[in-house]
Length: 224
Image 1 (cartoon, rainbow, N blue to C red):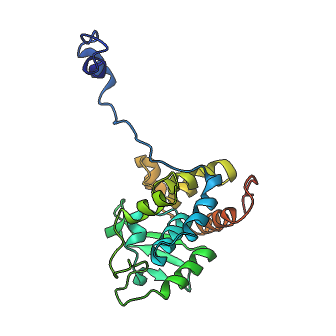
Image 2: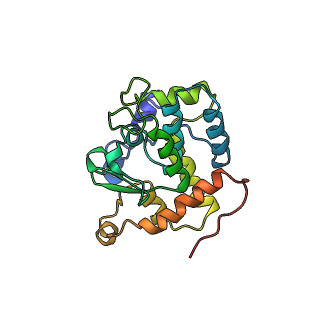
Image 3: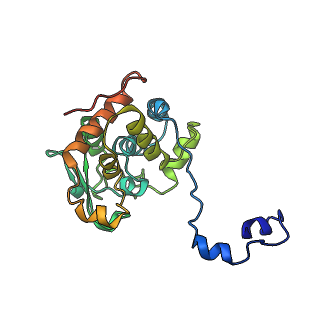
């Protein structure tokens, strides 16, 4: 009602303060970031690969999509966080939104990208350094997508991954949420969620990579 008054849709609040006491504090409106339908993600990857952008930037974008990671986590990724033999990327708690270490299973294509990135090594320890050997800025990937007319922001590819998992796989919700490093909001559920479901997430990320390289429209079967 306060919003209606502020927008001049009503002269006053007919419920007074009583309604606010009953409803309690309301959550802020969720703003959805621009994201692509999952069926269009493969085309976006190809558009970026064909661009004239710096190789490190293109590799960083492709890696971001394959891992469903946040932009900041990818841009600041360091080689001492990567175990190529075990195909694991461990993002330290200091760089995670949840403030705890997060293990990311690396699919075969992600490993290939990391091997390509090795050739850009400049001694800084960064996996995807800028052309000047610095950490990629927060606008670099956004600018790349805009230049290729991809109607999405880097963070939006996490939404594309989430929609794909829900619509095209039978993967349990908790596995998908763990892949996105989302915090379990329910205190009771969180108390019992001791596992990071790593093995199941590895299979899910391999299926995501396969989907991006295959014809769209097929449901990915749940692996047992």
